[in-house]
Amino acid sequence: MTKRIDVLKTYKIFIDGKFPRTESGRYYTLSNNGKGIANICLSSRKDVRNAVVASRKAFGSWSGRSAYNRAQVLYRIAEMIEGRRDQFVAEIISMGGSKNAAENEVNNSIDRLIYYAGWCDKINQVFGAVNPVASSHFNFSLLEPMGVVGIIAPADYSLLGIVSAMLPALAAGNPVVVLASEQKPLCSVTLAEVLATSDVPSGVVNILTGNTSELIPHLSAHMDVNAIFYCKNNPKEINQIQLAAVDNLKRIVLSKNSDWNNSAHETPYYISDFMETKTTWHPIEQIAGSGSGY
Image (tube, rainbow, N blue to C red):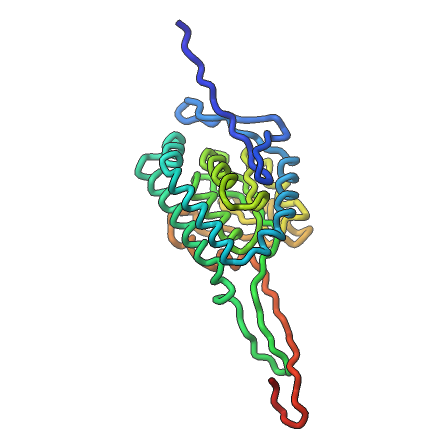
């Protein structure tokens, strides 16, 4: 009797709330110790462009929501991952992780979602300001979302890496285009299934799998991407991103801590990295002869 050949699932990419096949038609086989786990799409330049278009289209609806509502949406993602905990743990183990490490990663991912959900409606209270000025004006500064954020997720983490990388931008009110870990992409595509059935509007999160070194030039050079969050440690790729970003003055944010289990990645300063400060000058009418304003 001949040995049966396993039929591996081919995971699709996630663009605009849908699961299209990659435009390139290519894929690679994810394996562990020589055993195939799944077929993963090799995204192309066209897929990057489609993802950016979807993100830009979603920017207004996501940034225009109340901060409290964005917090509710992120909290809902945490609830759904909690409900699918066993699946995420099993996937991390299948890619070579220990049971203890897998459970710890899923727990930290859920906790991180709760942390950033809590900051959505507090960021402006902390980082906004009323500014003293030497003129008859009421002057104040507030933070606003900056636009489409491209994210290169950590290579050595599965669920925790992509969650930690995209949360600050989402909490700030920005849509994202994420290049998932090439080595450990399984939880990223399962996370896309969670997002597709959650309260996250279509196009707010777009997840591409494949060869990150191939996709980074296209994402970092795209003129409709406003910022790049790079979560790896490859000097050649960093230099490539910085050179490509010059054309439209993209903001480049580099992760300085590669231990994503570390609570140092839970900070409101990550959120402010993906926001712009808007300062308003409001004239104060003077009462004639009084020298005082109201």
